[in-house]
Image 1 (cartoon, each protein chain N blue to C red):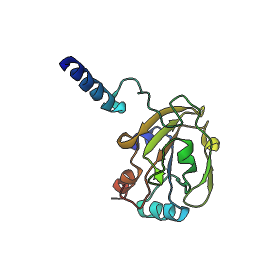
Image 2: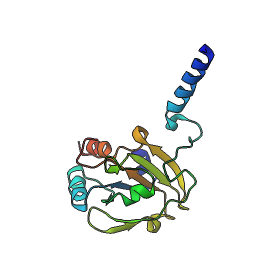
Image 3: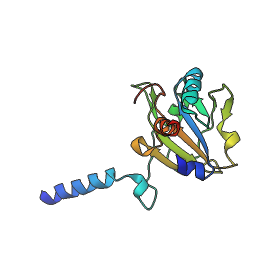
Image 4: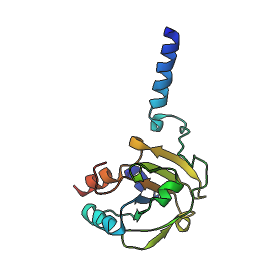
Length: 75
Length: 91
C-alpha cells in the first residue's frame, strides 16, 4: 500500500515536472495536434487588417505561434 | 520571448480579440510582431486549444520549423505569456 502510494506520488511528480526542463522534449499534445505534425495552415487578419497566411511565412524561418488569452482580460 | 527574437523566428500572437482590440492592444504595448484576430476561435479549434466553455484560446505556444512541422508545443504556464511579455517591454 505504502509502496503503491509512493509510486503514485512519483508519477504525479514526474507528470507535473515542467517540460522545458526535460532533456528531451516531452510529448505534449493538444486535442488535435502533437509535435511532428504538420502545422495546419490558416489566414487571419493582423492588427492592421492585413491578412497573414501561415504558409507564406513557413520555409523562411521558424514561426512561433503564441495563442494568448483575450488582451483585455486579466486571464 | 527574447529567446525567440534572438533565434530570428517570426512571432505571431493570436487571440479571439477583434482586429480593433488587437490594434489598441498593440498600440498600448508597442507590439513589434503581428497580433492576429481569431475572432471565432476557428484557428484555436484547429490547433486544439480552444476553450469552448470560456470562449477563448487557452495559452499555448507552437514552434513551427522551416518545413512547416510542429517541433514544440507548450501549454499553460510554460507557454509564452504574450500579455506579460508586452507589458514588461512597454515599461
